[in-house]
Image 1 (cartoon, rainbow, N blue to C red):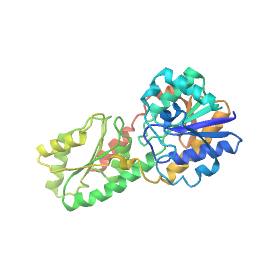
Image 2 (image 1 turned 120 degrees about the horizontal axis):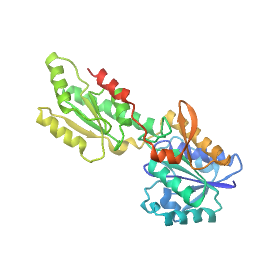
Image 3 (image 1 turned 45 degrees about the vertical axis):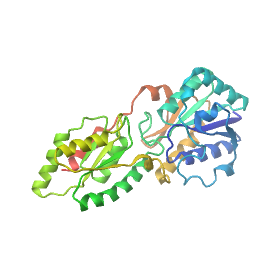
Image 4 (image 1 turned 90 degrees about the vertical axis):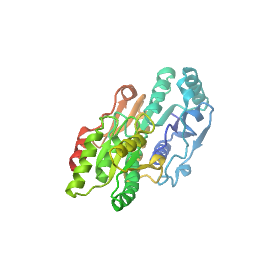
Length: 322
């Protein structure tokens, strides 16, 4: 290989910049040219491609977001557009592509290589930690710690007013952020898409605690779920049971901010490994971390298999709040 390109796609996640730095310098140190594609697949299909040098990735490890920008590209779902993208890569003399993003972005990478033969390697870049084939995704640890910092401040008001707060974290289809945050902040309950929520049980528990004079963290963690407005609907139902809950939606603050040391190291390790796998002739794979070991998983498996939420985390949260 003489040249590779990289892009960041889908929702941004803290740690993408350390991954960009790692890929760029790992390739350059092996005599490979590196090109950055701006705004993900949207930039690829219009040829918004710039050669990267070592100086271009200096002092970016501490920055949130992605210097390459990101986008969700509906047009890339069209096989005709994917073939045009492959031709653009060839015109620039690019022999392989590394894609940093979530399952949707990795699905696009899989289709691109299957249909056009362009070698691709994927990295799991998403705060949701819902990608099969890796224990951790780039940005997950930072998102958890960002949410915790906010919740610790919300708790001060919850305790001062002896009031319940529903705190919504990201997770349309998975409760990985909610479960980790819920345990770490000592939440009364965690609401996740994977498990049914028992409102009656929660209200009974709160009433019992008050009758016994027991303390309460005052915090319920809610994963946003597939339908917008879940947290507000739960607040309304709690009001009908005599509670006066506050609602705080953390939203996109979970995506931003400086990546934690964990995410910086994870992204750096996976980025360098992606270059090595590509130069060794591998393609159509995602590089992840399982049991502290770097592993490669076929992108077809990433698309077809679902990462399961550890039920012990939810059980532990329920146990510890009593």
